[in-house]
Amino acid sequence: MAYGKRNYKVHKESETFTFIPQPEDYGVLDYLTSFGHEYLKRNYYLERKDFDFYMINYTVEGSGEVEYDGKILKLKKGCLCIIYLGEKSHYYPTSGNLEIYFFHVSGAQVKDFYKKITAGGNYVLENFPENVVKEKFEAMKKQLTGDVSYFELSKLCNALLTDILEFSVKNTSAYPPFIFNIFLAIRDGENATVKDVAKAVGFDPIYLERVFKKHTGETIKHALESRDLNRAENMLLTTDQSVAEIAEAVGYSNSNGLIRLFKKYAGTTPLGFRKKNRPDQKP
Image 1 (cartoon, rainbow, N blue to C red):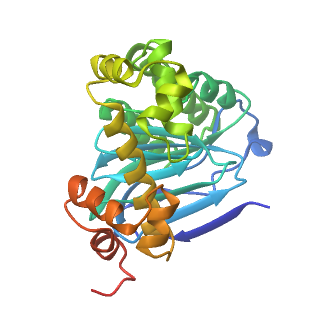
Image 2: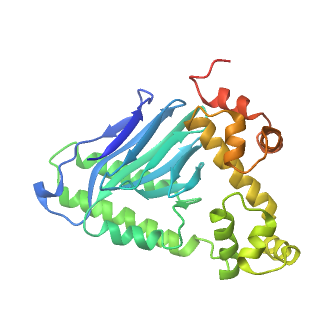
């Protein structure tokens, strides 16, 4: 059975089209289950698992995050995100209001598109052209206002997936395998330090920092701190654990280190971040 929690808070000007007939009703290889153009309120969130379809989400304005595959995916203006909702995911805004287009798609061919688009483990494409998404949305909406042709909807769905695949092939940055291995060590190393990352890939820490910065423009230390910040932000938003408990979970011996991290990158304390972004927290 599919699992889901939701706080579906959207502005009234949002347009959502749901309960589109499933393939047993007409028989196509790519099909929509729902799609929409929505303006999300700050306290909106969706948590889902075991839904056998894929979500394409495009950020028009504002910012949001998706927790998926052990990662926090940062979504900002121009970002297109694609994930499989059979795996557990948690989606929420991180700015006051968030404008998005979304498409829920499935079918025999969609899985192959998804595998190719996300082959490098990248679920977010930055600077995706908004006009491509908007044109597909308007064409799909038009199909539902008259005599519905589910084959035309399928063609539009397939065209959108093709556009996304083409963009991902042309525009996704490809780091050398060596740098990609460093990213993996940063991501997978629980509470890892620069020395831990260097040991994992078998190189001297000073040399590793120099090469990593040359290719990415940032230090390994900064990447590790960003990882810790993302993990802590997610826990502050999705749990009621204390700052000390969260600090320990992300690798700090006490809360002071986490407080310094937040002041450095977020300009506030962990509790300040929670109060600002969790409407259920009293000032």
